[in-house]
Each structure stands twice: as structure tokens, then as C-alpha cells.
Length: 476
Image 1 (cartoon, one colour):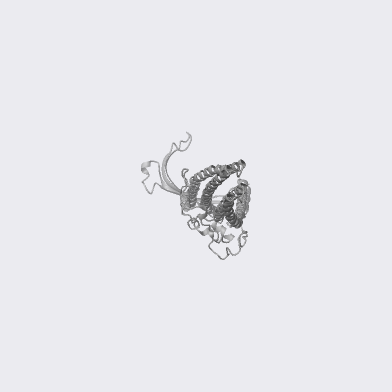
Image 2 (cartoon, rainbow, N blue to C red):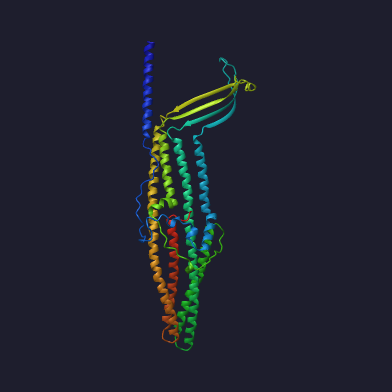
């Protein structure tokens, strides 16, 4: 009877062992969907939309984005502003602190493959019952213990890959902040030059309007024009005079904004040249669209985020496998602490290996694994979306550049024509061959044309700065 019971017990143990093996194999197979960290394929065109033929060639290896901002921007005052901003801007300093934080996380992950080592001293005192065998045995133990998880399935390695991708991503994020900062400082500086030009234009036209008013007053005294002519010219002069404080206000506000970008208190901004003296560099090659993967920091950051998400999937998949842990302990043990050094009698050692296979956590592990795959898919979509957005920004800037250049050329011709008309109108008015209305209209048109030309020149300079940023320039 005992033999039959032993046989049945042995059979049950065999069935249980087989079930355990099958369950472990099934768990291992469940994570077979993990894949290597690869970037999604993105089909880039041969050239950007809006790029003029012949301006850039696919064989050109160095485009605008590869230039440092010191080489790209010719204005020394602007370069000084950018130098200050990249050192003192608060947003950039926060991004750099994120790099420091990510670096500490990376350093911690690199220690994941090392065994944990502990040194301890303890006293053990057990009090048995009255019917027990031993009476209050006491033991003093000093030991060193180490535990090491064998990374067979790559769980720890993938954790390190994810931490490395996060660290590199923060670096690229800081570079992206730097490119945006460079462009913002340049655009703000060019806006300041435009306001200076518009102030000078308004003040010049205000003096011209005052001269014209004096001429009309003389004719009014001579009875050649009515009071209406004098009032209309006074109103025209007052309109110009009213625009001057507004422009001066905008100059102060723009200076304050630039000062804050540079991480300092609001104050005046040095300018070395006027708007129309600023050199416009718009004949540089933009490079090929595929170069954005190396040039644009935000695109690189998105790619690194995808790599980290792939590593997280692999790490989550490895949790289905059994974990192997080796533990070792050694030291001295004695009933009295004074006997610790009575070696080798007090020496002891322990080595054990542990295999842990999760059973009842399978549902949770599966959910974590599926969530990591969803996050990977989200990172992949975000990467593709950012590539499309980046290509769109470059194309938009190229189209704007082409059209603004055409508008600026026409505006320059219009200003030249109206400036001649203003000079002629003054002489004709003195000779009585032109009416005061004709003089007022041509002066007003000339003022409007000059202000428009200043704005177009500002747009021309600003769109070059934006194109430089869109291509990924400014962080080197």
C-alpha cells in the first residue's frame, strides 16, 4: 500500500514538473515579439519644395545647417547677443540641468550589472519555549554578502540602452532649445533694426510735412489756398507725429524682450549698423532633406526616444523569462564576539543559486509588455510626424524667402519712384503747378512705401534666420 502511495505521489510530482516546464516555455514564447531598436523608414524627397533649381545640389555635403552661428550671422553686435544668450538664457540652463539629471540616471543604470555587496554585523538571540531543545542560544555574526542577477535575457542591458537613449535625448533637446534661442535672438534683433528704420523714416517725413505746412501757410497768407488746405496738412503732420511715440514704445519693448532672452535685466541693446546695411545671406545651399536626421536636434531627440521605447519593449519582454540570481555570503560566526578571530573555526560561507519564474503575475507582465509596445508605436508616430513638420518648416521658409525677395525688389522700385515724385511735387507746388492735395497724397504714399520696404527687409532677414533654424543650424 505504501508503494502504491509513493508511486502516485511520484506521478503527481512528475505531472506538476511537466506543467511547470510547459508554463515556463509558454512564458518565454510570449515575449518573442520584441525586436531590435531600429528607426522607421522615412521616404525623403530629393529636394525641398520651394527650393530653386541650382541653388542646392544633392551632391553638396555641407549645407547651411552645418555652419556655426558665428559664421552665418555677419553682424558683430548680433553675435555678441547670441553669445550672451547661449550662456545666460534661463530656459537653456534648465535644459542643461535636465542633461545632468539624465546623466546620473545613466550612471546608475551602468551599475546594474555589478553585484550588490553588503557588509554587516549582527547579534542573534533566540528564546525557545520551556519544552524546547535549546535554551536562549546567542550568536554573533560578521559577514559580507553579495548578490548578482545573471543577465541572460538582456533585461539589464536593455535598461541601460533605454537610459542611454534618454540621456542622449536630453542632450539633443538642449540643442533644440539652443537653435530656437539663436533664431529668436536674431529675429528680435532684426525687428529692432526695422523699428529703428521706421523711426528714422517717420522723423524724416515729419520734418518734410512741417516744411510743406510752412509753404501752405505762406500761400494761405497770400490768399492762394484756403484754410482747408492748411488744416489737412496739419492733420497729416499730426498723424505722422502720433506714430513716433508708438514706434519708440515698441523699440523699448523689443529691447526688453531681447535682454530677457539674454538672461539679463531689461536695458538698451547695442546696434552697430542700420537695417539696410545688414548683409543678407540668402544664396547658401540648404542641403538634402535626409540631412535633417543629423542636423535637426529635435528630430534626433525623437529618434532617440524611439530607440529608448524599443529598449523598454525588450526589457518588458525579458520579464517573462526566469531570473537567475547567485548569492554568496561569508564571514565569521561565534557564540561570543571574542571568538570571531579564532579562525578557521569561526569561518562560515554560503553560496546559492536561485531561479525565479513568475506564475501568477503573468497577466500584469503581459499588460506591461503590451503597454510598452503601445508607447513604442506612439514614439514611432511622433518621430514620423516631426519629420514631416520639419520638412514643412523648411519648405515654408523657402517659399517665403522667394516671395519676399520678389516683393522687396518691387518695393524698392516703388520707394525710388515716390521719392522722385515727392521732390517734384515740392517744386511744382512752389511754382503753382501742383495742388496741396497732390503734395499731401504723394508724401503719404512715400511714407507708407518706405515703412513697407523696411518691414520687407526685416522679413527677409528674419526668414533667413528661421530657415537656418528649420534646417537645424545654430547648435554647433
